[in-house]
Length: 322
Image (tube, rainbow, N blue to C red):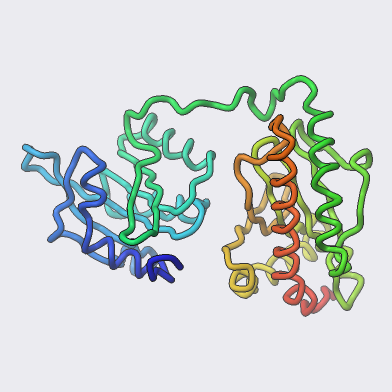
């Protein structure tokens, strides 16, 4: 990791000694003598990265601030932690720091500022030497420029653009993964489009027992402004679905370590289960720059290859459901 931070705890230790990098960017000041590390609540079920007190200059009354650190891309787990810690410690302000931020989490922080009494901040960390923080979302900020259309009302011609994007990506994925024996080239004409703006392709994983390969699949989703890669476990039969999902979840840390980035366990409406990773934000079929699309398609294919390589050995050793 850049600047010697291998773990979030190391960055938290540095930040505890350098709270001025936050105070310089907010309308209040952290009392450096109040900073506490790994503060426990609810009998140790919650452990906050940093808890401190702050006050507005000229006001003697102080308030609690929660700081949640993440040396990766914003995800649901860290958002949930930030909210849980804020409630547990009755914090007036919450600061979430990450090295990369996704649009949906920026919108979540904006929503908190517009609809709750809490002041929520999202900072982007540059782990150069010395580290630097830049506010991305904060109370009272101007409205962020929105995408031209929502996912439910795509631009006219989205089907043509989406299929062209998938036709560009899928052969590259097949070429990258051919030696793994893990992917079969499909025509975009045969791909499903469950909702506007979403196309996906599935391929059974490699396993010594065919029953597992037919039940768990790698998949790739190409939306108009982001890409999702994951493992898919169908909903039926229920006992079988729960068995494979639980086994994968138990071995998630093993796959995270091989992959180099944490996967997110998700149960979607209807009970369909996934372990997902979103490697590319701002990538999708709306771009008109052919050269940019080509580079992005290659990057997506390389990400898919990396994902399969990081998960295939773990999956291959799963005992089939009896």
